[in-house]
Length: 474
Ligand SMILES: Nc1ncnc2c1ncn2[C@@H]1O[C@H](COP(=O)(O)OP(=O)(O)OP(=O)(O)O)[C@@H](O)[C@H]1O
Image 1: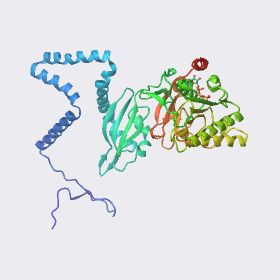
Image 2: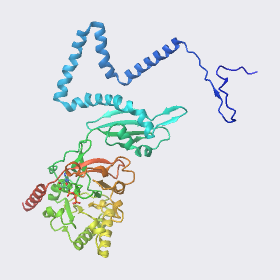
Image 3: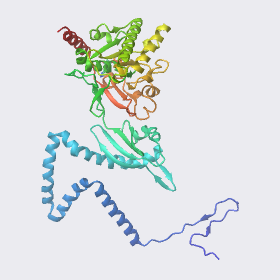
Image 4: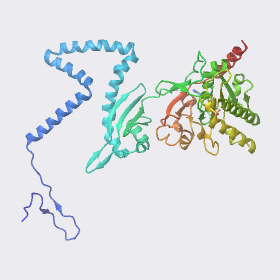
């Protein structure tokens, strides 16, 4: 009754075992050659149209000389090609930055899109587990765009439906090594879209000299170094509290001294007061003259100084209540920055329990109530564990310099920071290469920014102290 189709016939039925698979020969339908040729031609035309649509400049660069060569001969094509080249080559040689902004980075982005990302996209996606094999087909996240900056490639990706940002954040090492970069950072742009940043070089590899002291008094954000994208790193100190964590020799001192340096004109103008707690007696004692009588090293004195800061803060709060909600620095009510070097000496390693509790309570009060009335805390810390610093979450802005263990990164910067590329545990322990380099996570943004603090040398600190004392005496 049912007509058998070609290939349905059972073949090789030689086994008597009941569950042996029955093998059918596949049906072979002969396709006429003309159909195959038409299909390939169609694909070629679609591919050409798509390439011209996506990369009109690159296609034009190849197509125009080719067309001229065909129509008028190679001499005309050569002359036509040398006219733009005679403009572009001097432009590239004499004004590299505008050339790169208009042409250079676009050409590089096109090249890297084709040679690096598109070429390796399928294998990297499948091997890292970000692509799926469904119903016989590879389902891959879409590579939308590549842009190049002076130091990194920024790749825009459309995630597969149902994927989470965490799926990508968990695979940053696969992505980095798959595309030949040393690291990868993941940023969300909008629902379903990600930016992957692959550094091509490290713009922070060379130590930075101290930033020059500003000409006009400012309470910040003060310039303390450089961001990875080449922009100045400006640290906000007024209206927040900042925690700087880093292993020994990570360069915590350079962040603290750069911030002090940026605030120096405001200190001279009476708009800022710097209060220093230096239980290690090493870092801040070097520029002691800058702090005047607001300097303490002995734990008992540190506790007194903190209590005094709390008292100033509470008096201000009582005066401001119902009158103003934000602090504007004035000579009468200057911004007070309480700088604590190695806060764990006072909170965790302090053997006197009563003193320890007093200091912790004062720090907690300042960090919870101080910012609206113009009292900020800038604290440095080596060991970010909770047992050592149980109030670390009271600091809205955090900086992780070189850390010893990968788990410490999230302890400092908050959950997920390391997955998003804040590899503070990978920073070089060689001072020239890694000191002062770190990741900043601001209260306002979940994405860590890689930065390097400028190095303020002993001679710079001496000059700062001398200039301040001289300015006050005049
Ligand atoms: N921003 C920087 N750029 C280049 N080198 C730096 C920088 N900061 C510090 N260094 C170098 O690293 C060394 C250690 O720096 P620093 O003492 O500031 O580290 P630290 O984190 O305060 O260490 P510790 O906790 O042991 O005091 C310095 O002597 C200096 O040579």
